[in-house]
Length: 427
Image (cartoon, rainbow, N blue to C red; front, side, top):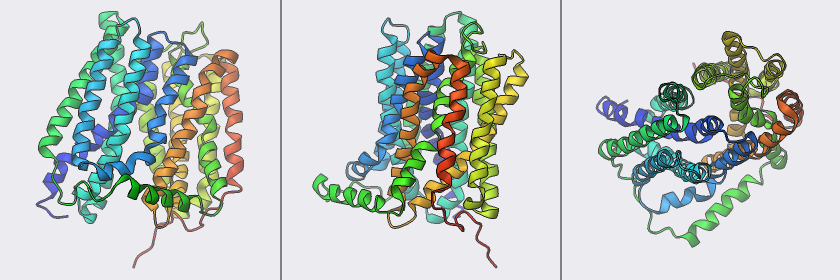
């Protein structure tokens, strides 16, 4: 790495990816906790917050327009300001009588802004750094993205819980949290306006028009759907997490629900630490461990074991639904086991999509895969709340175990390169 550029890159890469991770955390995770604390039903929470996945589902469709209009630097700063405005709107509307409707619209605005920010930030990363620096900083950017998720679903939820206790007013506590986040994103926008470099290649392309770019988009999608076994592959992407997509929506609600309602009766802060902090750490460790094992023996060797490691620990929720343990450390241990297994199995899922995306349009094809991945989370999540309220937590978590089976069966039929994922040996 060029020693002269290293300090400059350190000034923006960590903050950029921290700012990228935070909105996803509070749109997809923190919103669920907030709505539960504000007495919204499980059916409504699961249905409407699952719709918030939509901007990430359709992200590949509008990513080419970021190439045409303005610079990626412009889009980063503008989206951070828009996210900040959306957060301010949430803070102001939480105490209102129509809180649920107003905040959902604002969360959707933030979700759209966040997914657009993802496109611009990832593109800017490649333009703002040399290929050598991109490789050197890849671990740094991923670490700060993970830290943002940890902050969102862990520290922010714990803070909200403490404010609930101090003010004895749930709505006011969450309004303070989102008001603080709004200020943070305005600071991010001002800071990045000052610190982001201005790469010579980061320019809009006035020669490209909608008429010119649509055929290119069509070619990308056509080439994707011409891949061998593509229908089976897409089914696998959609179904692999069919059970977990339902579990991830209901698990926070189960932990926060009262004992009388069949839940565990955790406080907001207790949930924030167990699921949002300890769980996130174990999820990350599981992912790292999975990557190390795949590098030794390849994806084909490990995928079934990694899938089982993701799905079998779901049984801890069945036990907790029946036993309703009140031991804080026991609950934490169960969540740690389940999240470690999830991170371990999720690594195989990501690697499979990377393998499927190999070829001429690798980046675009991977974006399509991630769109299907988000769709695979959105659809099951939408009906999970209604299902849980209809049959109760005990039968719901039993159903989740059954729902993991189709993804396991499909592993037998998908084609996996025996060498994919293996560490390349060098002399």
